[in-house]
Length: 258
Image (tube, rainbow, N blue to C red; front, side, top):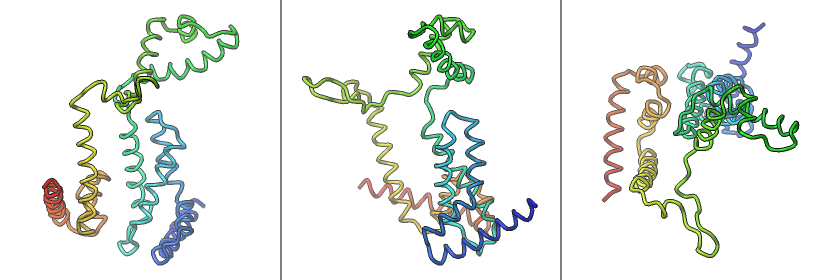
């Protein structure tokens, strides 16, 4: 039965993909997303067990990767759509997690205790009719009060404070933290953002195939061999395109500084 359903899913997907490549209809694309949503659920479920991000958020991000795969899939290459789509879905989720990742690493045990503490605190509030003390929460968790205080402090400081955070009051006027605490690295961060914008502008000026290869290698984390198989070209061609593309990007980005 499962084999029959699998063949049916593949046939339905190919039929819709052919129709979408002709019409570019949003309705057809949405049908393709629904039909292949299981690929997204599988990846989202895996990564939700590896991080603290919600399953629903990962589903939404994964769907963006699925849509990108639908947009770029070429039936004439003869690849299975599911095999083609998975790297896009996985890559989109991984990039999301990298962007959302905390710069402060906290032991998994502490994160588990912190989540348990939320439930324990509510229960103690109901029993005591007041906010429980750190000692009471620690006792309910079966740990020492100093360790609980360390966990609280680590979790509170997990997300770094933005240098754009407004500071000051109405009388003195509002300013941002970056202006009150001068840091040469803030300027470097601004320059990095500018470089990212310049890189995106340079990418769109490249020849389509070269741009695709660079995206596969550097954004989707595929090996040159995997890219060659996907595009039905030789590894040598991929290597040359990568070198040519990087050289072109250097020239385009260097020229924008003039």
